[in-house]
Length: 88
Image (cartoon, rainbow, N blue to C red; front, top):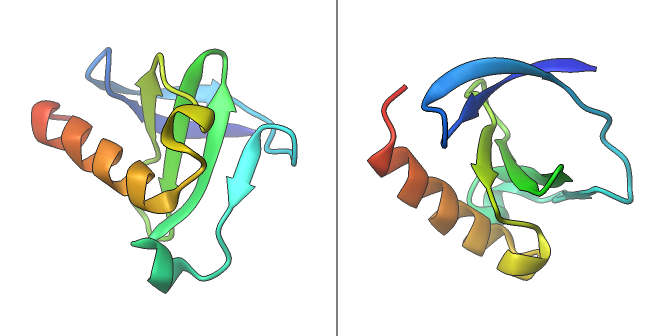
């Protein structure tokens, strides 16, 4: 499936082809209790963080689900850190 993402390293929007599976994605059912984070996905040595809204998922280089302990709160903190330093 093709989706548009915000690439934090390149500081631009881009379209990628990705397949969300149980092997590469962790979904969070109760979005309200997970700071709006809907899913986190490992993709080619990067971490894709998606929210339950209309914002673009953000791709963060050199991070993985394991690096943030599969935790949506850690994902939110990481996403906020990159959004503050990156203007799209």
